[in-house]
Image (cartoon, rainbow, N blue to C red):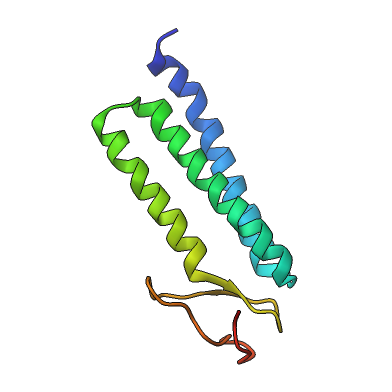
Length: 115
């Protein structure tokens, strides 16, 4: 079997995994109100997402210059996602700041100071 032939079998499983990961994350982080649990899970979740995407890029493209160019940006995107996402201790809301280099100070739902 060639790599192209194997890719035909792997791509549908990757997309199914990606959809399950996105749907599960969306449900967990929007419905769960336990801020401490969400803080612990979020770092792991973002790491799994970045590693899964990097693995898919590596599997489909190999270690060519384009794939090697993409990898540091995946790390940066993961870091910024972790940095920009906060969880309110009062109401449990997931607060995503739209500002790259600064964090939100207050929860938009309840007005409590964010950690």
